[in-house]
Image 1 (tube, rainbow, N blue to C red):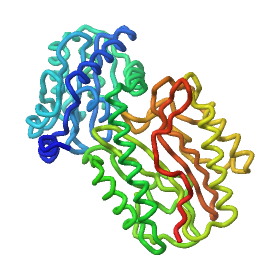
Image 2 (image 1 turned 135 degrees about the horizontal axis):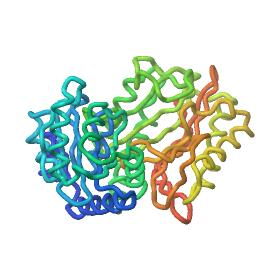
Image 3 (image 1 turned 180 degrees about the horizontal axis):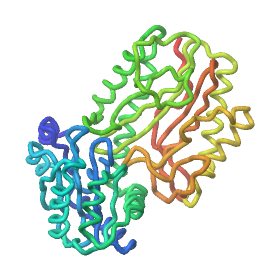
Length: 405
């Protein structure tokens, strides 16, 4: 990192992509707006709710979880960012490449009229007052939805989500370079994991050593986002999912356990998600069988991943192998993969009910996982790029079973 970028980040101002990349993103978005016959896109965001589209399309990073924003991007006109924290306006103006940064009231029910006025004035400034817009945002506050609906001719919430998924699925060369950098950071963390695990050492101590390795490699630790660089090292031998209340505890790693470790690396707003399996002491025959089944599932999934393939098809390839091994009732309780890169997870996912299909050049995580109560768990997860000639695995870190002696 050069000195200027280091100084900017120390001041809470993340470096922006090159101007040509900013223009490419705007051009791609406007192509998608035209395809959906929309005049613009309104993005509602905060740290926990939809931060990635706001950052990707404007450069703005929320300073803490309760800070809110609305980004207005017309097909033809000025891009405007609305934020609700006046004290953060100077930093927002430094980090964003939108044409202007305006203030709005915090979107709470008691301030609906004030918010409606701010949104109406902005939409009129952007030429969208009588237009048709897409609305993008998870759990959009009712006052925001009402404010947008009251200031435009038509609002299409479904198109907003579809447009974002299309942006995620079509990364640029710049995006891919940054994602591969993020993969390298994740691989540093995975290498540190193998060395950090020791019998009797606490989950916390292991996690802090891994996080330190990723930080030294350039990982980003965001204050506001619900997902940033982290590692889960819960007692997954007793759990069917890596989604647990705590990332780690003071619980020591004990002989006889076999669990999976979930690691996410974030860098410049890009994400990579990885899992590896740890056996503490010599694994039992059944624990080895669980791990070997995951290896076979992983290979089966790689064999079917390609453009035009559905997420369900990739899931079924893994499930069929799990069935052969006798573990069809013990699969990861969340899903077996997801689209990633510009955000941590979006459609298409790899699950029983997935309907979306993969497209060429998109990023995909596959994560075949098995959990057998009172015996052990295993999972292998890597980030892939979907290509016409087959998947390209971006991670270099070994997927071998990590055995702690």
